[in-house]
Length: 103
Length: 169
Image 1 (cartoon, one colour):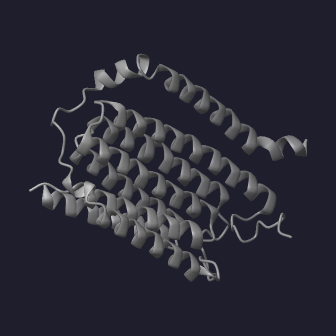
Image 2 (cartoon, rainbow over the protein chains, first blue to last red):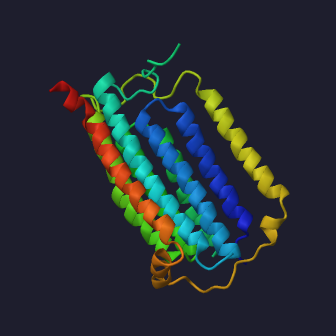
Image 3 (cartoon, each protein chain N blue to C red):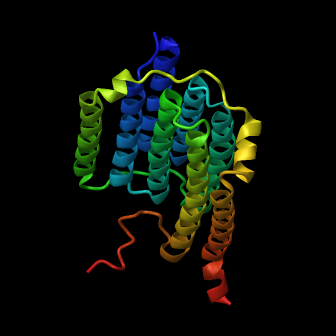
C-alpha cells in the first residue's frame, strides 16, 4: 500500500511547527536562522510531494523546488553575513540584546 | 515503502527537534545535517532524484558548512552556551503558537478529502537532461533572474560583512 499525500502534508506541517517554535523561542540568532531553514525545507517537501502525487506538468514541481532551494541558499548567506555584522557591532548574537529600535 | 516512510520521517523529525533544542551550537548543526539527510531521503523516496542530490550538495555541503563558519566566527571565548538561558523568558508563548499551527495544518489536511484521494502519478522519473533543457528553454527567464539574485546576494553578503572594517580605517 502506498502512502497517501496527507501523510507528507502533515509531516511538513510538523517540521514547519518545529521550525516556528525554534524561531520564536531561541535567543541565539544562528539558531533562529537554522529554524528558518527548517521551515523552508518543510515548504519544499510540500512542493515535491504535490509534484509526485499530481504531476501537473512534467517538470514544474521540480523546477519550483530548485528555485526555492536557490533562494533559501541566498537567504542563508545574507542572514549569516548579517549575524556576523551584528556580532561585530554588539559583541553578541543574542536576539534579545539587539533592541536599538525599541521605543 | 511504508516502513521506509515511517523510518525516514522519524529520523527527520528527530533531527529537526534536536536542531532547535540542543544547547551546544555545533551539536545543533550536526542534528541539522541529520535532518537534511532525512529530507533528501524523502526526495529519493518520492522519485525526485535530482532534487535529492541538490539537497545534499547545497544544504549539507554549503549551508551547514556556512552555519558552522558563522558559529566559529561569532562564538564567545567560552564556546558553550553557559549557565544563562538559551530560550527567552516567554518561551511558552512561542511554543503555544507553534503547537496551534501544527494542529491547524493537521486539521486542514484531515478535513480536505482531496489530499486522500490523489494517487501517485505515472512512475516515469524525470531525467536530469530534461531539467537542463528546461532551464535553457521554458524556464530561461526565472533562471536568469535567479543568476542575478545569487550574484546580488553574494556581493551583498560580502559588503555587509566588511562594513565595520571599512569604517575603522
